[in-house]
Image (cartoon, rainbow, N blue to C red; front, side, top):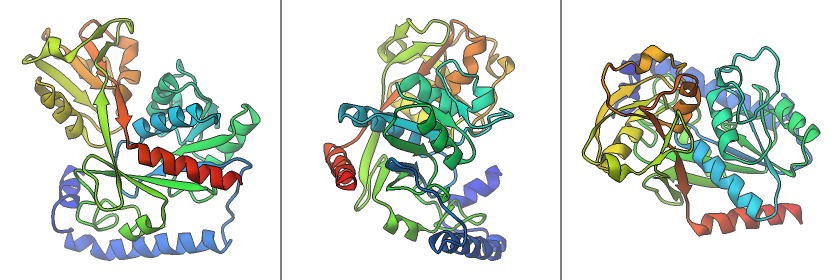
Amino acid sequence: MKWLEKRWYSSQAPILLLPLEGLFRLLVMLRRFAFKWGLIPSYAVEVPVIVVGNISVGGTGKPPLVVWLVNLLQKAGYQPGIVLRGYAGKAKRWPQQVRPDSDPAMVGDEPVMLAQRCACPIIAAPDRVAAAKALLDHSNCNLIITDDGLQHYRLKRDVEIVVVDGERRFGNGHCLPAGPLREPRSRLDEVDFVIANGLAGCNEFAMSLEPAGLKSLENEALLQSFEGLAGQRVHALAGIGNPQRFFQLLRNLGLEVIEHSFPDHHDYQMQDLDFSDSLPILMTEKDAVKCRRFANRKMWYVPVNACLPESLALRLLARLKKLAS
């Protein structure tokens, strides 16, 4: 898989996979056609729905954007709620209400991370329609944000936001399995907003992720600045879509990083963090929710805040106001 991913982000696609890409593109087109013309039913709910997603495989930085959206909408007087898949969650029954103390093994890591950052109701379920209905049945929210639901066409949406990795972009530009794209790049012409995590292209809004210091996994009240670790060696672990983004962030802050990459949504065990030395262990916020059960004084995580231009906020709020009129 690592070999294939390297080819995805090189200049050329694996030639032997191009016929399969053609089949994949055909299936994507037929599926969208079926939803568009009602051959497969889609469902609307009684409140506006904002979809935050991407067209590529792997993480692009959606959760920090969702946190930013929740804060923006709450300040504007909305009562947002979040629905998401609950990827890798092992719960036997869905939908599941997600709280800050929910077990990430049951509902997924990203839902728990969002619950710890957002003061709003959150429902996880593979079926976004069922999740949206459960959210409305058990809360007073008047707007739904669905995280990573761009291709979940069963739930109708009012606003589509796509997040792009500003460094890796679209790789070789091919669809699965020859490239990293879930849908052709032309899909971006249909969405409302394109946000680049990093350097933005034409008609895109740039998003930067600003670290908010270090927090101890063992004791949330303990905070530390990066200046206190400047020039020191640290273990850095990341089980996210693009671990190098996290490692480079730490290097930019003056740390000497020993990299430990894990698959996205990795189910951490204590032995994964047994490095047999006294060096600090730094991890992402998403990784922290799965490591907290065996936390010790060496473990710290790096919460990040999304920074986006005011023009995006104004355009989004104007769009929602127009929908309500």
